[in-house]
Length: 499
Image (cartoon, rainbow, N blue to C red):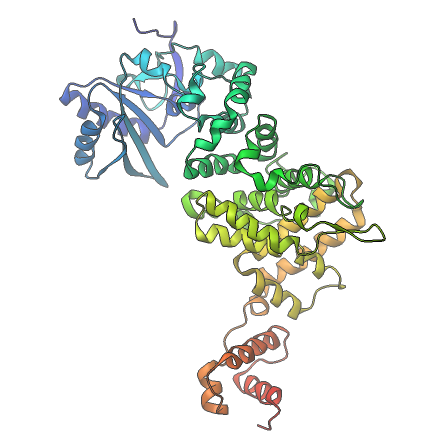
């Protein structure tokens, strides 16, 4: 007999979701198929949250049913797992897409729920019960998921949960971070028992779970958790070698802890922890709606710049253990660690199947993460220095400025010097003002091109042309030239000719 909750529970669905499911109910009714909504959509609805991913369990061949439903909606079905008969339909919705995943029921609905990952996801509602807004529903809950949901607990659905799908090892930590829950101690013991299975997870799934964690406001705590559970080292051996790697006295933590603290600092700077700027340190940090929109920008797969900045923070010093040297006077140095760390990060991200753009962005952030510190060496950086900085950091100039701020916080820790911090944030504000308010400084408009130099000055095509044009752009950024005539005069003088 199906185990229902004793009382009807409050459940929320948007009107758009309810309308979609009503259409689905009619389609399935014509075919005589029973249908249940399960998993995260049910979990989130019971919490009053929205979810665009809807898992549907049907009696019969889910692939065939999904194909017929897709035709009715004028779209196509995508097989996800032909062996286990799992298929997906993607439908448009306001501001995004619905993902409807259809799966064939394994035995009864209760037996099917036994195969799910966690008790809070082993919940089902008959499709006929769902209405728009808040409504009262009967929930099928064979494993006590509703109790765990109200207790804020992530608990494995069975002792074999992680052996059935090792990606669930990371998902446990991700769900805890996303929902603000704790992981049940017996489940943590299962994760520690099965942690080596994480190496069997497909690279794309590892990437996605890690990025889901990075998108939460508790990435720092989650990576600490992954490390305690034995999951971080197998996924990121490049970071594991940083454990215990000592640093100069200016650093409060070793390389590994500094790397994780940098993630915490990024979350703090992006105002993800603690909401408003609650202390003197954050009141000094430049922030604006433009900066907020910048870090909310989506890249490949819906991953944001903010999440990528956290990843860069986690990896920015992985080159230090290999480059560490100690001079005769006892001075500790890490020459070339930024370049080596960038190369190591590229290998790690390629292994995890990140997009080429994301890989290049993190590579540049790590390569140049000390550049903002060099800008502080001057009273205020010159226009030429600012131009060169944004030229070299390409599309991650803003990101690298914030990585530098996070690095500073994570270097000093509780020994932070407020005067140094004030100077760092002031320089950052100055450089950002040039980006947002004086674009001609960072991206000078074209005055002349290579054809002009060839036609007017009789130069031969070759590398010299590019070098001269770059010199012109620098002079423009510095405010030394403003017109095409001045640009040609500048080049002529540089070549040692009279114009």
